[in-house]
Length: 611
Image (cartoon, rainbow, N blue to C red; front, top):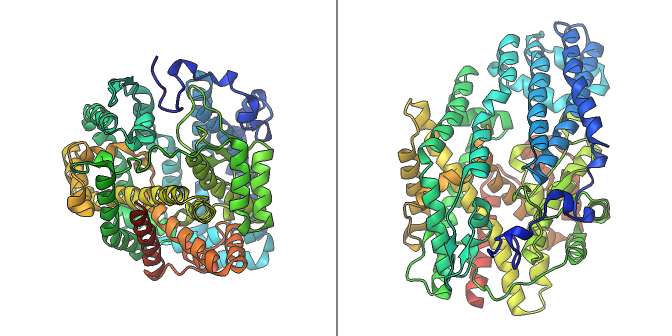
């Protein structure tokens, strides 16, 4: 009987259906929507309600009161749609095999497109108002304060707004413009079929996309790890031309929108819309990929020595260094340790963590059809939900601490901000989670009861730094190099993607890691490419801030923690750089980036000494 790669000792046949998992391991979606019937009833009314926005069309010049009424109506519709959309998405995440869940999710996407299309006139009308009108409205009507930053961003982007009719057309096409991501996910989840793979003892194991990335890629069994890599990349290679066409379509979509809006490039458009200076985007890539590389090569050399490898292949760079040491944890133990490890952030922060465990905001069941991704999500006007696949390891506990960082941020922002001021800027979207993980990781290191446990805790932090500072930033570097190619009119083919991917990996790893044909297919492994906001780079910005916060709390204690919690409460009410400054981090300079690189170097140096 085959071993299931998602749970040690379990089998594929023993993975239960969603209906059979214990309710205490699932989240309570009744807080979001009391019953499926309520979802259907709510969905049926939203499209009609969204059409009521037409009553405000052409009237935003009437005065501050009419203007406020329009914004309040739009926010109310979006919040209702957001709740239903979250309900459908969360159900799909826990049982993606259900046709009912698939259909419900599809319907909410269509409804969201209608909501966006019906309110698309607002931006164009706002910009058509005489100069100074919006500023006057803000003075005359104090209730407009929650929309202040959004309004100022619209004014700042005035030159790139389209006519009301064109903006409405673009909004109406939102569902179509999201097709590249949907196609990629359907391919990845539903169409890939892998051969079984053998381990060093000749035992066969089943393969899946998630199984490779979550289990086999980190296996200490070199035969299993490399066999899985060969099987995995051979299967990907068979689809490379199709996936490259999807990749190219996503890029062309961004390029076309940038030209339509009058930007010099798609990257410039994305950074402008995020209120992130282009030089900061470039600095994150240039400093980290250049200055972190020698230290990561040293970590690769450590793997070569400890694992007895003749050479390090790309599939070896995440292999476990101490596979016999696998500290375990029950979910109850995880709750206690996470609460203790993050207690330095204060009583309010801790109370939210406790509520997440107590009130079933967390889904930690393992069942058939559940996504293998971990995330925190939900509408911004209520408590968040956290999804994780719990396997009883302490590594799962570290991942949970990361996701709870997101959850606390969403909760605090939703509680202290309103409407358009809730969402964190993309640059800092990963700061709350990586700060939580860095603080908890440091607590694990400092509270280790043995040298071996301390060594294990260091390795957990390094996993996070590898994924956020190396893997995701290399993904972003591929975009940074290939968007200009598309803008020059050259199609992005599978051959070009493999060539440039290989160049980037070879530049970063040097002679420490062999970059083979399988490594050149790495571009096929990331769904973030299908986000119009160039999401991958944001992990490096978030972890830079998160590291700075963790180091400041180590030095200062409560004052630094209070600054950070105040920043979380500020949500999206300030620009990304101003939010970072509120937390005590100056992103206008390279210093925080270099400090984070230096911290990673210290962790690697200690790890090398301990082996």
